[in-house]
Amino acid sequence: MTFEKRECKIDYEHEATREFADGLERVRHSMNLLVSVVVPFYNEEDNVVPLLERVEAVFSGMPECDYECLFVNDGSTDATRARLEAAREKNPRVRPIHLVNNRGQSAALVAGMRRAQGDYILTLDGDLQNDPSDFPEMLALLKDYDCVCGYRANRQDNWVRKISSRIGNGARQRILNDGIRDAGCGSKGFRRECVEHIIPFNGVHRYFAVMMRNAGMTIAECPVTHHPRVHGVSKYGINNRLWRGIYDLIGVGWLRKRYVTFQVEGEL
Image 1 (cartoon, rainbow, N blue to C red):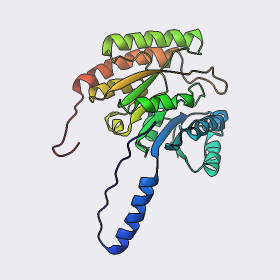
Image 2 (cartoon, rainbow, N blue to C red):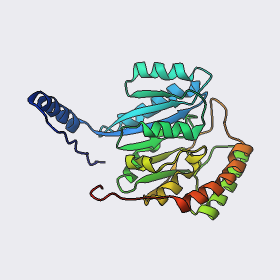
Image 3 (tube, rainbow, N blue to C red):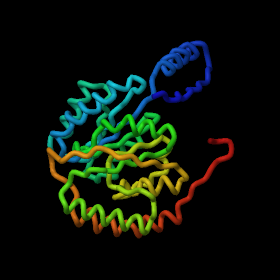
Image 4 (cartoon, rainbow, N blue to C red):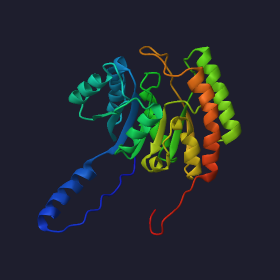
């Protein structure tokens, strides 16, 4: 798998700056494609180390890619913060982001994505149910598409979560018709330019595909691995998954009709 590298243009003002910039250019051209992995954590202290180990194992088999991990601590009250800081000490690719208060999954994802430096951004949930082993396929699809949405082909959840998700996905499809079968799946991939089209609100992570389509971005789906939860507890139930999701459809339906995109002459 090969990827196109971006060029870095630099203005020179004097000879010292030129020498420094020449060195920076050589470093840039020697770097591989940079991938940003964004993961929200809320009271998931036991998941930090196993998830990082899985990410490290996957990228060890992809020498064409360098990576960074933006692990977002969403105001956790357990030892998540300490585990993230310890992970940074062992692996300089880990960039912990600590939110002052618990603001929810959408806020944590957007906070990480806005700070990502990679050419491509890959997201996972912090509950170990998503698997980084799907990254190579998602990156291959991102060569041809702007956004990749995973769907849990063999979902490992209880019947309550499956039923509420099925109802919510069905309602979303009928009203918004975004063409995505599993909006709640945490495994997603984006080209970096997608981030500017994400309008942050509580619950927006279920509507990333709607915003991408409104912005004229191309989307692909791919099946992804789903594991049973081992550590921690789910932050979602009937009230905050099904009913709130359906309520959000009203606002997102309005936003889709009023959403504005534009191009500036001379800019790509």
